[in-house]
Length: 201
Ligand SMILES: Nc1nc2c(ncn2[C@@H]2O[C@H](COP(=O)(O)OP(=O)(O)OP(=O)(O)O)[C@@H](O)[C@H]2O)c(=O)[nH]1
Ligand SMILES: [Mg+2]
Image: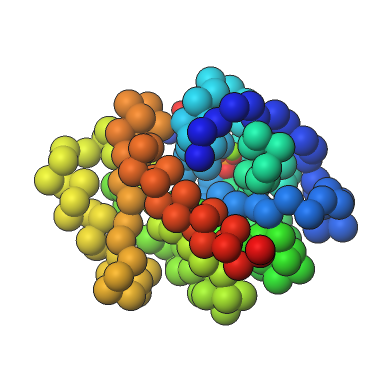
């Protein structure tokens, strides 16, 4: 997709606040600090459209961004930040699992894991919810600049195994910092956008 423009649409606290729009949406999910907001910025060629930061738990809301006025990118709240209470964690789980199931516009989930770490139980749960909701997905391994190329390939395979991905699904290593893997990821996203376009018409 050629990015002509991108803009912030709105922040939602709960699924009742989601924008009334027919635009199809692609959601970005993963642990807090994994790099969701940074990846959105990198994909859109923006510096700080989606607010990112070293302080964990930056994005506690569901943030909507419009891409060319054609699709929505949805930045979901991160989960699994060590300092949040269990009740807050449960609430996030509820918001996200609810969102996956009430949003017919949602057709593609970007599942982000840090390339340096084994997927956590929460990552596996997110994977399960995504499959159960019958959604398409792409697994992205973030912060690939933090490891060597050989480690990057090895870890991508480990992540695929831990998430029990089928043979034909590969994990996409990317770096929002160096932009490595961003063109390849766009190519993959475009396949889903085209497929969905054909289904619609
Ligand atoms: N080296 C490196 N750092 C990154 C990369 N992507 C993100 N970061 C850093 O990781 C931190 C968290 O990034 P965010 O994009 O805010 O992460 P997030 O998943 O949106 O976090 P929450 O909103 O808290 O859920 C920031 O300090 C980023 O600069 C990357 O590809 N490489
Ligand atoms: Mg964020």
